[in-house]
Image (cartoon, rainbow, N blue to C red):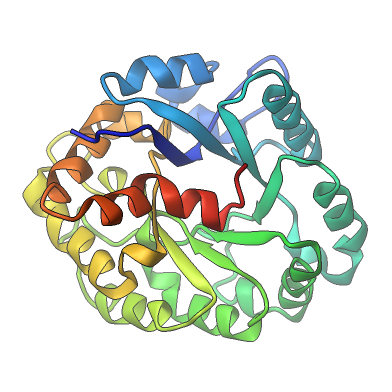
Length: 284
């Protein structure tokens, strides 16, 4: 059992009165409000001391409103320590003012624009996308990468094109666990890990397996490989809650990682479940 309070670097909160989530029509289980108190209840007996909110793909143009809503939450709840907000990086140089506006929000730590569902397979190679992404460095904002495994090759080129930007890979690049696919994900994520400006979240893994019948044995090779190529110095724990509820309770994922790392040193476990979150997301 993890003997210290955990920092969860990947939490989604929803407020159905304030925002529209068109994607939720395809995931009715998630189509309700989700709060930090709900998270705390779901995580028991684990203690989630603080969290990083990650944008929830609200209907545009509410992405800046969402970031300010998270700031309001942070102002009254010390468990909310950071926000990764959505910005339409395809706007290129025209995004500068919005980047500056986001950076002025105290809780903001980074940006995420969902890449996984972009119809253009070369979205991240567009000149405007690279231009906007490069501008994040000036404002000390990181970029969360949310992709499917087949997008890794172009993502590697994207990360290389923005050497001054700090990238965080979400969900270990969503390997094809349900289909039992290992390559080329295994080779390509090793190449990604060789780049100095990227770290990785151990998050969102159960939802890439069969939601109803996944087993720890199926997930173990993927988790072990990511630990091998990134090492504990460059990994962070993320619950991906409440999306993770589609594949089981919150405790299923954190419990699995707890068990898989039980033979690791206290220092390594603290890095994974706490210290690296403070370092990479610059949490107070």
